[in-house]
Image (cartoon, rainbow, N blue to C red; front, top):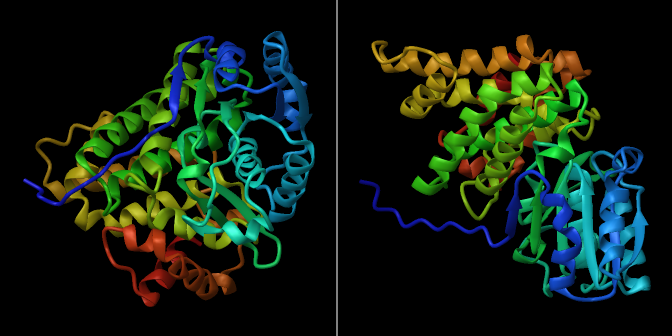
Length: 389
């Protein structure tokens, strides 16, 4: 019996299922106000997903303006741009429609409407003083889980680092998770966002901050992803696979939130190179995940045995270390062979002479590194990146 006290939080109201996105008008009306800002990116606009949300809001008498300039891996500069807009226009509610970048920027818009100054003032944990505007988030990908996390991730052009705002005020009031919204994702985006969700679930399952509650959700998310991501990748119109992936991403988002289990060294390693070498987040964590699992395997034997079983491995008669190794092998195979994503740093333009600086960058991320179940020295971090390269 583990006697360590644990806590678990997920205050966002979640409406999940086919057609959940159609509740946006009703939910906005419950939150109140007359003027809404819809934060999105060009793709949901082109696909008509943003326009559908806008129409549903207007049906409930909201005056809706659209900010559609969200770009992948949004920068601090873009965050300050939208901050100035929301302060000037005095909106009552923020609605985010899109992938993780759009949802994160919607969360930033919400808190910056009510908190003064530069976005940089709020980087870190617990620095947002006032609640933001009410916000509704509608994901159009199945991966980031941003709709249910209290974090917003941004990119610094100056330092080439991923930075974040973590605060209870960042959580959405309502998340509308509709599998239909992800049906139009092309195969590569399906793969990238799906592996992002897998990294959330697996890292939360390894984290020193995990609990029995987070373990149950994380393992279910892993099972759903292992069984359904290859199907969604190969058969984009398979609604059952999209449904299960939307659910898995939601569960992964809940457990990867820092207030619950959180991520660990896999994300720290990915953040060390992703911004500088312009590697999409899902690709970067796809590279790091199996190598960090390999490093942690000796302290996660039972957990990795369970993961191996989600892949259909018959491991009950195997020695525990051998059973656990099967999880590492299968995760790497899923990323590289099944989905065709990079599994080496060299494949995404990271030079070998950057390895030592990458190790230093990873170790500087103390929040994530402190959650890793096994300590990593500088020498071990360098060796880890050598293996990844």
